[in-house]
Amino acid sequence: MSIADRYGLPMSTSSAGAAEHYQDGMDRLLSYGFGADRAFAASVTADEGFALAHAGAALFALFQGDAATARTAVDRARRLVAGATRREQQHVEALSAIAGGETARGLGLIEEHVKEFPRDALLVNQAASAIGLGGRADREQFRVGFVERLAAAYGDDWWFQSALAFGYLEVGRYAESRRLSERSLEQYPGNANASHNIAHICYETVDNEGGIALLSDWLTSYDRRAPFHCHLAWHLGLFELQCGRPERALEIYERDIAASPNPRLAMIDGAALLWRFGLYDCQKGPLPWRRLADLATRVTRPGFIFGDVHAALAYASVGDDAALSSLIAGLRAVDAKGHPIAGTVGLPLVQGIAAYVTGDYAGALAHFEPVESQMHRVGGSHAQWEIFEETMVVCCLRLQRYDDAGRLLRRRLAHRSSPRDLVWLSQAQSAPGATFPAQT
Image (cartoon, rainbow, N blue to C red):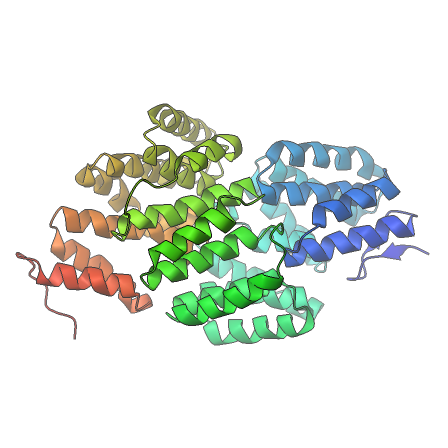
């Protein structure tokens, strides 16, 4: 009798212990709980030949930004999976493509795979949460459609509800997203994905104090070593900045982001928080950028555009022209190999960041404006990629291009009544030379 995971999919191992540890690793990875890597390692110890356990270790390493470890683990899985089921072979093949940097091909393989094996949850999770979704221009709508098509296969499953909820919040379906997230937490209180969704909903609906209350409470029982602790701390810091409390945001950065055991998230989230200190005019002294620049050299690989643009924030902020030049060269190299957005979106953003820190705001806008409608393609949530829109607003204000600033701000305010945008709009409207009418 074969051993199956909790989604009913057979696992090619005769070891009950290996299967139990693998299932534990699955649930920890799907909920972003602490210890998924340990569970997969225990599964390998129980059955060295269990290919899925090595694949699980690769998935965890990918999330940590440890590409070398991910490739090593997935190579082991590929060597071992020949005698396993076709489902497991396809699982490893898709993961191998993603670990090898062929994100678009890997996502395509997953899309085909789940037509036959819709309950292969780890692969569905990888595709649904993929930061860039291969650079797709329609990634938000694609994510919702991809996950919704699988609803009948999962029913009232706690993980699936949080995965679908994230898709809903990114297309503005906040009430549905909150309902699903709260239902997920009722069933699995430790699901960081669900708490993350509600934090996003608080941000998008400008419930900053509600977001602070939610995360301050939830993080007390969430292991600081867990892979999403850093990112949830970033959300908490962003709420504090929105409320005009930069000192608290900086405390959160030092305590929970800079010290995170996840180097890729520490770099990305740290850069995204510190950059806003300058944009929001709340910087009272030198900011701790050096550690983030050092982390960027460890975790950045050209082609992961979301990481590349955040590495650029750190490199530019410490004046590391050599690192910026190397990053730009890397983007051009992967663009020449056919990357969908490295040259068309990633490169202009990096060049605009480099111009901005030198005070060349016109030069920055010359890079940003042609890709304004494509910025979301770098990946991440709206709350993450909008930092480049905010940088454009500040450039316009400093160049006294008040009508352009007003255009950007009116569009942003139609989406979300951001306190920061309202402050900027007031500055633009009251400035000498502004010609656009006051907002009614």
